[in-house]
Length: 399
Ligand SMILES: *Cc1c(COP(=O)(O)O)cnc(C)c1O
Image (tube, rainbow, N blue to C red; front, side, top):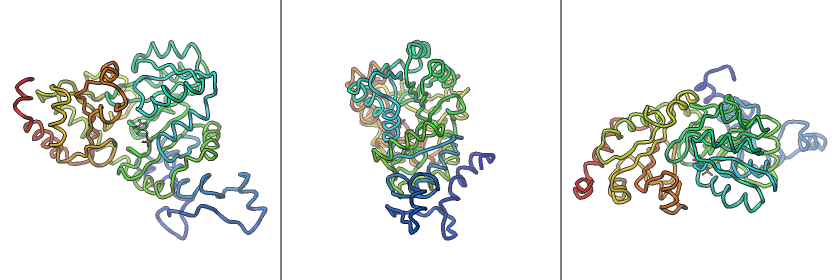
């Protein structure tokens, strides 16, 4: 399986051991417990000497197929799963960090991750240093002072900034840190952090992996040694992936390559179109030559992803008129689904921040996050065109 190409693996990988009764699709096993007639066999499974399942909080055949598929797609030794992406992140940090430890990360991590860094870890006497995203020297300097964990995310939310993973992983390794990368935006189709030197790769499977905005889930991939510790933390703390969600994610992942390739094409075309629109101030997409992270993205990603953002003249007022006019976009807090999704950063990723905090992070009030779906590109561009044309004259004239 590992030798086949990505699209083939996305379809076939990880399912064989969970098929039963000649089923060609992984069954959804809702049973909470798994019984044994033979007490010795039960014991052997319970202590991990024999493969099998005991209790649904620990393992489940449907969930295991999901773990195996993401493990193979990330080319990892081991993988485990979680109820949500945030559970994957909090359980991983919970496994690795103790009072007195230090973690280095960036300012632009996902909103929930940022809350863990700023609200929860300090209460547990974990020191957190958040560097300017994309300032590689600053990150290297902080890492060199010593840290237990170097936590990265690239591209980031919402201005799709890029961090050089190979360079950062080297810096982390030099001080013995565990290097963690949230690969949700890039997906394993476009970026393989383990091959670039990271120790652990995290996903919110809710987004591109599932791809249909109908199931929550998370995953962590890496070495057997690390993943086993994280699995143990999760099996006790209980943020287990539900079998039905695992099934939906598995089904979504079969088309991961097809979807993400199309989303990248659409995002690139939309970004180029937006650059021609008068009322658009700035377009952020790593595929654009002018983007600050373009060269690094070109080096470490095979394509630039389905996420972009753009700011409009007239700020919030323009956003308020523009977004309701779009016919082919959900106005929602989600991303990565087959439908195009739009939302202002002030109501999605950075809703907890004040306008001043957002400004300090380089997030204009008129910033719109755009998650390209797999619709026909002509329809997406026409849809944007009619929405821009329908803006009130007052907005167009005053800007
Ligand atoms: C959505 C998201 C998460 C959190 O995932 P949930 O499944 O919503 O808990 C983490 N990281 C990134 C980059 C995300 O987009």
